[in-house]
Length: 202
Image (spheres, rainbow, N blue to C red):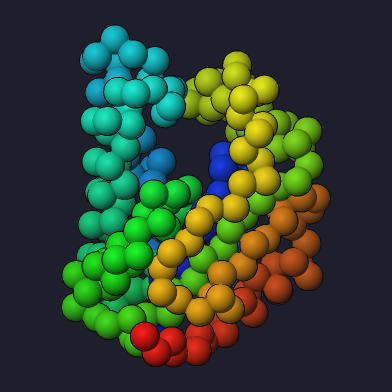
């Protein structure tokens, strides 16, 4: 059974790091939404005289947010259709709320929900100082807005998104990524992702 795994959570929690750790053991197309659309989004923001790092602007949300996510979705569908496991890395907040979204993705790949093992890893980080240091350490320009507005941003840290997809509760894992990502933690993640989900009748 193919695997479609979403690594979601706010910036700095370590979504990409967690996904990379698992990709060493589970072969998969590695689709980070920032990588897929980041350069184009930054160029368009600059062409409109806006801060290329600001993903919280009204302009980004109105004109670019869905474009970026839909492009990542299309790449996901192509890889699923080609028979690949897929790791998707991004917050996906709106998509998780949309009950039909995941079914549309799977169906567009010519598959059914019984043929794809969908998992969601919600990566959180309860240590705020550690999160800030991680954001500083990765030295990406798009994070500067977060650092300049840290008081507002840190309120989101314990955020667990609303997930309305029709998947078993056992297919959702809230993972606290505070501290070192040890082999023991990595094994826990591997067992969660690798375990075949129970088919959910609806």
